[in-house]
Amino acid sequence: MINTASNDVKDFKEIEPSLVSFVKEHNLSKRETDVLKLLVHQVVTAEDISEQLGISRNTVRIHLKNINNKVGTTSKSELLGRFIEFVIQNNPLEAKLTNDDLSILLVDDDESYVDLMKKAATAAVGDQIEFKHLSDGQTMLEYLEQVKRKEPGTLIPSLIILDLNMPKINGFQALERIKSDPRLNEIPVVVFSSSSTKSDISNIYALGGNSYVTKPGGFQELRKVMQGILSYWGGIGALPHQ
Image (cartoon, rainbow, N blue to C red; front, side, top):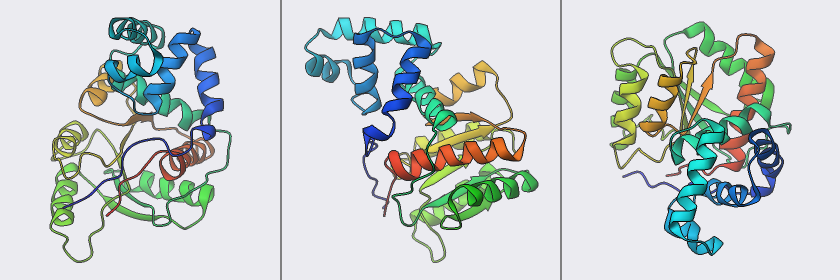
């Protein structure tokens, strides 16, 4: 059985500048900022937020509705995902990995782009990351079944970077299977896709995706995005472990 760590943010100071910028960009009030900060800390129920802020649950729901309207999101999970995206895209720091054995499962049928992703990650943080590449959702699910059985040569991914448009089983179907499995569902899944369709993004968050990143075109922009992903999930956000 796979045990997972909590998804609490390890060190909020690392993302405080991003929170300030996010709040300013979306013109959030002080109380809305307080609610968002607790949401980032994975305080996800209205009851828990109301207890910590000393306000009613109905008031919390009103604040969450106002925040969603300002950001353009429809749920708490999508709001948190959009904030993580913002951190990834705007993190000015060099990647600081606190996870010593970071392993990333790349699921994408475009092998040339996968090679670019690996090179971009290496350029950002060096060669301390272990990558495994699979070309479609069905192969990924078969591999994860082997992981659950602890078969030799398999490794629990610290993070899955998942493309949407793939043969056999696409990214939506693969994500749904991962997030409905109690032994896999706490593995963070970053959807990395060329699509920027609003309905695709909303569907990803409804299925439990942790963040959605549109594939950048140039290598330098890809390096920046990979650095942001690794900074967050390898140093700030909590990752699963065996």
